[in-house]
Length: 147
Image 1 (tube, rainbow, N blue to C red):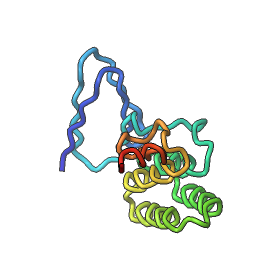
Image 2: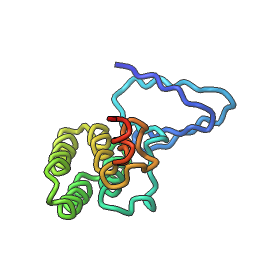
Image 3: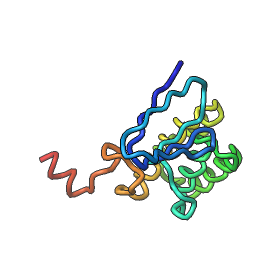
Image 4: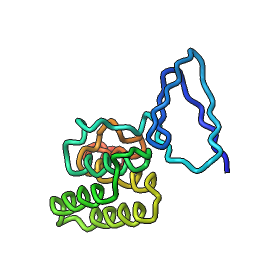
């Protein structure tokens, strides 16, 4: 099954650990014909940004998702364990952790990375890596919307 990616000018994508950048003024299209680990620039996080337990989980899942040679399942499991210890009283987040590990063990690293954004949303609701629909409303905003 083929995948077509459209990159805006200066947009980057990581494919199997290799970073490609559109250096043209217009859009560029790539056709991926084989199974590959693909990570768009909007999902990328620098190691320096992985400063909290949730962002460390995301960072490890991201490296696996993009096919980064330094990504490994043990590092992801270690990051999840640290997160679990710091959030032991929250069963919903612990269930997300289980889901992340299950997805990663099944080889679906992108799904593990996407699930880890739920951990970030619980820690930092307006983190820049989150999509608008993933951002949690502040309690005052939620009350205004409901009423």
